[in-house]
Length: 250
Image (cartoon, rainbow, N blue to C red; front, top):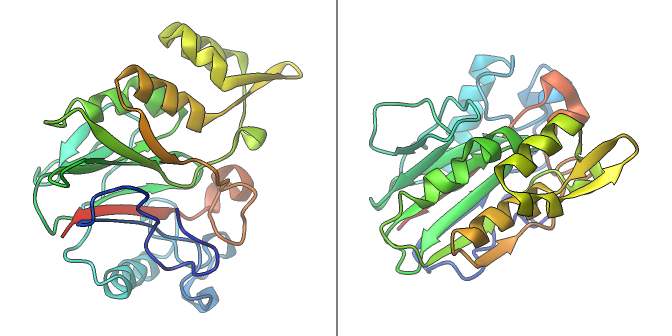
């Protein structure tokens, strides 16, 4: 996960193979981004083109991203639709919610502002992916679809920053949909007044465990409360920017 002591260092790789690099960006770029945006909700390092920010500012931010982290290629960005579509990075298609590759130097990317980014690698470091897993995507099967794309099933997973259970209030309808998907997902909810609070980290862990994936790290950050570090749609509203979550193999 990104460390607040140095917000632009690559994410901790946990026990990922040494050739696998992963990054979760923050909302600021070297602490000097306020001049980079004309809308305070997007301060300062918004990387999404679909949230109403100035397109040239976003283009500049994306160029800075490549330069700052010395990325080997421009990231494969998606038009994310909360689906169960996992695309190969070489595909000309861009509508989906996960990207996977077996090619070195190819950068897979998803954008989030509360949803859960899931980094995945096989033990040999020859295939990697990243998935955008909001509650709708989890229900639609993005985790299962992404895991199914791997040639090896002995996988390593790292959770990037997402909203915590304490701040993720959902209605009865969402609870019912999760329980209908799998009764075991009930464990990811706690009752709250006439609603529930969802632990998206736990829900993803339950699904991954059921798929045989046990080696999981991360899951201890909150985009909603860590306002100095992350964008949050639930906190900032429609003018919230988006962080990028990138993975590639050297």
